[in-house]
Amino acid sequence: MIVRKLRLQRGWSQEQLAQLSGLNIRTIQRIERGQSAGLESLKSLAAVFEVPFTDLQTQDDTMNTQSRSTELSIDEQRALEYVRDIKGFYTHALTYAVIISGLFLLNAFISPGRWWVLFAALGWGVGLLVHALNVFEVFNFFGPDWERKQVEKRLRRRL
Image (cartoon, rainbow, N blue to C red; front, side, top):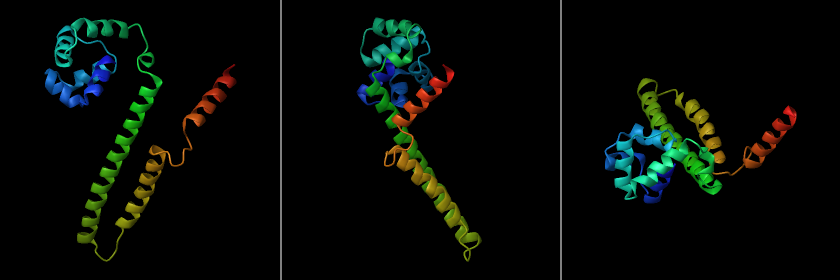
């Protein structure tokens, strides 16, 4: 997790870190998920981050004994989740724009008199709108309070 923290502090993507370190992006992802890293990988990362090799090696050793949730503060975890959610929404919106544009072109060439693509655009658009409302917490139906209540409810049933 220290690798992710160091990478985010520098504002690098996983791809950039992979290029700078000479490692495969899959290796970077695996290390950031908490799996153990090889000696050469740790040396490459230490050189890129300009930190002592022993710092990363000690972190790698403690990763096997500690849980991942204790390494980042709750605020950092929430910030990472929020950024992932926003990224997911923007990916969804871009996919929507590209696919619906292609369908409009297809509809214009195949059957210009009947605009069947509007049904797809409307249906998917509603889904995109719900996704946006959820990510940007306009209406927070399933927010942290709801999750906490559901967990408490579930735990009471088991007792």
